[in-house]
Length: 162
Image (cartoon, rainbow, N blue to C red; front, side, top):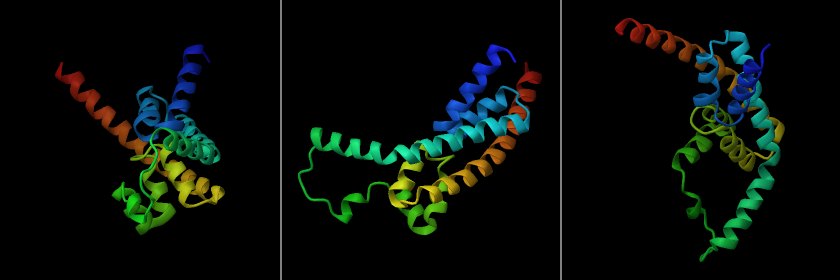
């Protein structure tokens, strides 16, 4: 294995820990990795990111709360109405629960944001990580085939058009 390929694998793995659906998986497809190798690297990266952010989420959210209070203090008391910010997230959470959050995390949310939100509302970290693992693995297979198919279609279209 040459250094270029090692750097590429580390890059794909690292990108998959934070931006899975629009970062790690497309890079693995565009690097022409075979199915098993690409899916293994990106799934390992996504699951590693999920485990990492599930374990540091309390520390990050507490630090963010202290930072906000110091620089942007609240002028009024918190009410349930003040948490209506992201209607999409609340619809998903209320309708599908943890499974819904896990389903949308790899493609719409990023791994860190989705995992931290899931841990905040569902404190059982092992359950959150399990749901994320299943979702990441399933989306990885689907996205690999979609990106691979469209890459081949676009490559042949532009290659023959030129």
